[in-house]
Length: 390
Image (cartoon, rainbow, N blue to C red):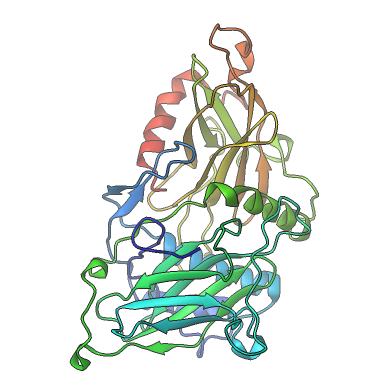
């Protein structure tokens, strides 16, 4: 899908610098990150109305873009045994190519070289089957200082998904841009660096990008089955489990649902407020040897496996992974899932939904682990959700 400002783009704050030519491992790279501090910007706040991405400004600076970049580098090293992203010398199908508009104010990034004789574009294959799903999950661009200036979460189900494409306005003050893409099956890829014409050459700077605000997009509804399928694939390949982990495997990662009295709204918290709560730790440039650790995705399905709500989370200044969501009419049961970037896919207890006439639900309207969903804690969850930058 084509990424356009501002609703479908991450427009990211200045972040950590990575010099892959000097680094020989991810941890070598991350030691360089402390050279650049994270600048304060406005971040999107979204509370879970399924299918309606509402974007509001918040006061907290977002660390989401550098956190995702750091985590993809971690995965590149851990899953593909590669200290650096792959490049064009490793194959053109996965390589992102950036081209500038004639006036130098807009950049278009495409994965693959299918426009050339004998070239090929990277596939965008949506599927709910872990053995089939194959797509570019993220595309992003880094400037000459290593700052992630734009990022797009991709939708393989979109009509225009192929080729994988994003379009961005060139930020003020950049002198070069380097594109990246992440393939769910083949890791992180880095494209050729492109030099930006200077203002002295008569290029007009785009005013929309001057603030470098971060406005994270959420995965489109059509992408939800593909992300879930890929989590199941990773669960099997990385965590050696054919099924999601559950409460018996540990309450800290388990997503618990609480449903309000009329059965129209629900809330999720990952972990037990009376016991172990899952951390939401963004990348920290002052502690580069410690990888980020957070719940990246939280989502809800009904009794038929249909997606009721889905949200990718921003760990910036957040202590609890939580989500509030609406329950559509006719839904009888809901189950929450959470994905931890370090510990895989977790499935919470199924919860019955109270009918309008008060039938059903009763004691099962709250999933519980040592009182995790105590009614007195609901207001705390709501406050946490309001503070969560999504």
